[in-house]
Image (cartoon, rainbow, N blue to C red; front, top):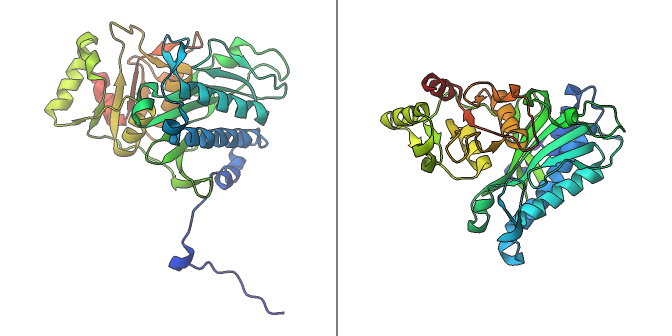
Length: 336
């Protein structure tokens, strides 16, 4: 019997699809000798839920899941129907996966005990960021942080399991639901982005080893805040305008962060008269994005200290956030 070695055919008829998320996760398992596969499975659970949420968003206008749900969450914000849908989908996926013992969600007042006695991880999540943009078909997203529980498996969930500094994250990421659906995550060894190929039902590696530009021409802030923010912020914004930089603000944190991560820029959400402690949630928004920013070569601060070193004191704690390209954050800090 004759045999021949396999040589990849690179003709246009057999174009390369790429590396799937599942295969990429498996290839990276050696970075986590203590995880024995649980963290990899957890990331797959999040990816699965994001596919379902992406489907629901894509047909939202046809299935009557746009608009307000009729309740307010713990933030005092009116819940949208898709907020509730996303919260259900992610919580259900994390429950069935078995790796997570507790979830902190923007949509729930208290910690959700998943009753998974062998679960090693705690997930903090904003199931659907950008609620105000849902009904007008603008990009929205999901943000998640993953921590290893501190107390022994099987014991009751304790505050020290949940209220951990961002520097204790073992993984973090976001899903962007836009012109395409993307999942971007880090496990502390760089940042990688995956684009969802709907016809195959798979995420494929599309943005390997993302590196944030050291500088950039974009500054992102809700300009309506400027009358009530500190003088240092105003001085920085005026300097940006004098230098001819471009103002871009979508109003969806994931979308604004993603653009600046790829193109270079800075996102600012300062403390203001209306929100004296800031508005961005520390546990499930700021920490995740700060981890990603630093892994991509950027910086994240609350104006006084590194975001990842802030000790949380409550589940829904808010913080000012200045995040993005290293040189722009340093320039801002000079004004502060």
